[in-house]
Image 1 (cartoon, rainbow, N blue to C red):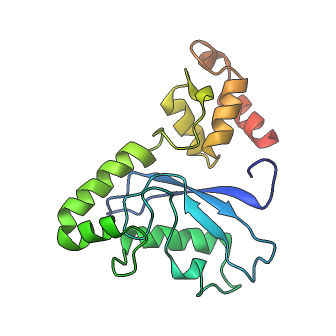
Image 2: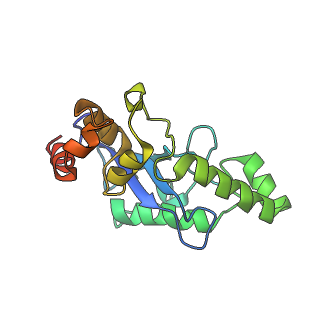
Length: 186
């Protein structure tokens, strides 16, 4: 949850295997409208993604089930799975990012290399995300990634680790159970 609101969530999922996105851990900003489940969830990638159907600037997603093909049978889980599937099945003829779509159509091998590089730079566990605040200064990427890997949102992990001053020698004094407990009590 973001700001204690059950209508604003951060979702996380691993990139699909055997794809340029396989080493990524992708974060998605999720807004649940008042009319849910009869209205679609509003989603955008927080993690930067190099994909024809995702805006490389805003993270906006072009996916039919988030628009006119939405039905109440879709759940949060099935929608996140659809986003994960989208990463493997670009639709360059209905792009969100025309430049990336052009790259995909003109040179797929080069497109895949760029997508792989972006995944390593922006979506690998411990990679810098737009939501990272100055509080992360002094926190180790591998510590942040370990707790993100447990399913906690990056912002929450950074806030808790910062509050616990989980830096330097303190990382040896504070147990993972203590950090997890603090994350769960938020």
